[in-house]
Amino acid sequence: MNEIADRLGIANSTAHRLATTLLSEGFLTKDLHNKLYRLGTPTLALGNIITRQSKLHMTSQYTLETLVQQTNETAHIGVLKGVEIMYLNKVECSHPIRLLSYIGKRNPVHCTSTGQVLLAHQSPKFIEEFLLNKLEKYTPKTITDSQALLHRLEQIKKQGYSLCIEEMHKGVSSISAPIRSPKGQVIASISIAGLTRLSLPAVTKTYSYSSL
Image (cartoon, rainbow, N blue to C red):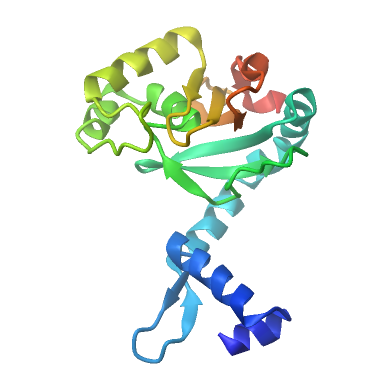
């Protein structure tokens, strides 16, 4: 820990706090025998994902910045990775209360607007298999019943967007719309998130890959 602190030019307590956070997210691992830290596999996976989808990452910047200007809330681009969602890009708002999200951050599918809008556009077989998983409860408003979530997904496909009100964090809401490829396939999601009081309708439309 002393070496990390020295190289970064920070206090030991700060280095320990940062390392603990990175360990909890899987970006660092700790050898139980020699107590040394090394990069975790998510770091390599994130590098590959960003490289493969760098065009989406770069072309989304202007659209995200526009949404932030319109709403003064944080905007994200997210993709589906297994049974989680991962953020490919993020533009932070100027609001003093910041969300604990970052590029590469993974979140659950069933209680995030990004996850729900992406899941809603998967194949019936994929959705059926996903609903076999246990749906963790994060707040009193988290959907934990598979049939209730299925009904939500059907509603999302009809209305074209997903709205989550305090389903993952109390006091935080988000809204997402799908991003489609030139062939019409939903390949990602664009969202804004912030305190529940925010003006959510600003992102209630489908984006095409070429319009970002």
